[in-house]
Image (cartoon, rainbow, N blue to C red; front, side, top):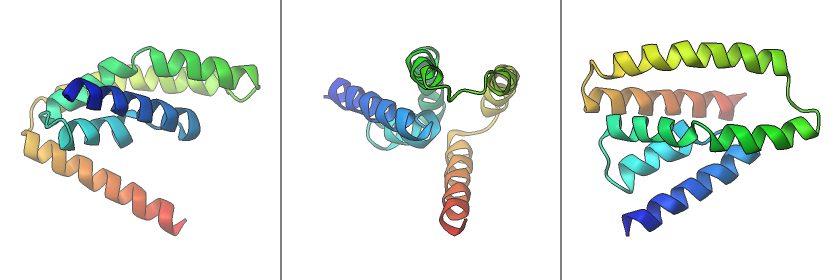
Length: 118
């Protein structure tokens, strides 16, 4: 049963990624924690592993085909992601799952409020 749920999470995250440019933090991680009952650390790592190629490759090809990718910005963001993911993963490994989950929830709440009031 979990494999079906996880497959549906991936499909949903893929659609939302194509629509809004989100997926990992907004859809996959909460779904893995709340629906599949993975530990927060495992959910984060699983999301990063899943997003490594499929979202970027096909999504970027379609957006680039329409001239909707700023390649220099994307390259700069990629460098930041490369370094930031390593730093973030090291830091996440030093705190408890409960603290990590609460920090993640606070980030989602902050972004939600900002988007709703913008």
